[in-house]
Amino acid sequence: MNTARAVPAVPAVPAVPAAPAIPALTARALRVHIGGREIVRAEALSLRAGAWTAITGPNGAGKTTLLKALASLLPDQSSGGLRNQVEGEIQLDGRAIERWPARARARRLAWLGQNESGAEDLCARDVVMLGRLPHQGWLGAPSAADRSAVECAMRRTQSWDWRERTLGSLSGGERQRVLLARALAVQAPLLLMDEPLTSLDAPHQADWLHTVRELVAAGATVVSVLHELNVALQADEIVVLHEGRLTHHGPGGDARTHAALCEAFAQRIDIRALDGQWVVLLR
Image (cartoon, rainbow, N blue to C red; front, side, top):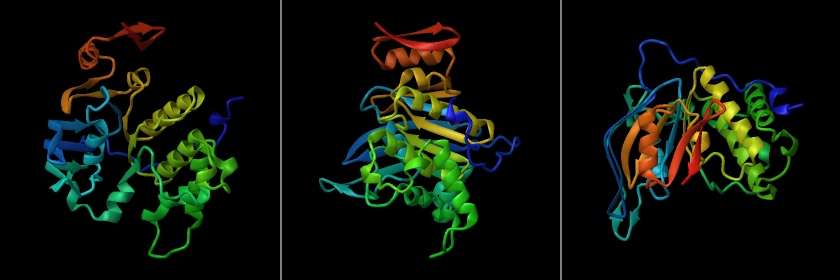
């Protein structure tokens, strides 16, 4: 029996209103400079609420930088004497992202980064409990709702069995499932995930996909950076980046989206229908 289907449902998320249809995230005239070099340019980007959007493209295309910019997570630091800069306008739920109070934004937007560190000595359950901080008062103890959200999220990612083990003692795949549980425990209506399938084997990649579909069905918005094109092609919408430029944004099953992907990968891939799904073939 597939235990991923027998555990409690994914933590509930606040419903996204059906009308008016306000995009979850928008960016206008976005420019990201790191160390004086322009890494990302996006004239206009609007990510639909209540949908799963995959951001993909070749290595070095600027995918992670774009996602961090959208989440206002790029550090304002100098590199070689040149300061990082994010220019343009970013809106979260129709409101300038810098106008959101930090705690309200943290409840609204959950983040899963790649290669995150800094909590190696914490047990897995405490790592996941960090996702509940936006819901807790200053120095407040976890509530019953916090503990329930943590357990539900860990069971959903099949990480509850090692809840007492430290994060540093876990394998790469186990660690990734704990970090995913932390993001789920926030119960945010918007989840941004950077390379969420890193270190996950094929069955757990399938579980991640099932979780995403459950979240979207419940009204949440998911935005994920993916290298796995066969998974990305199952998304509602795909954003294609190439050499730091947003070259296309469209439905995952659209022929124009497929053409943009093939062009971004220098025509070294082909996209075909197989058993009712789109698959990537190498040329």
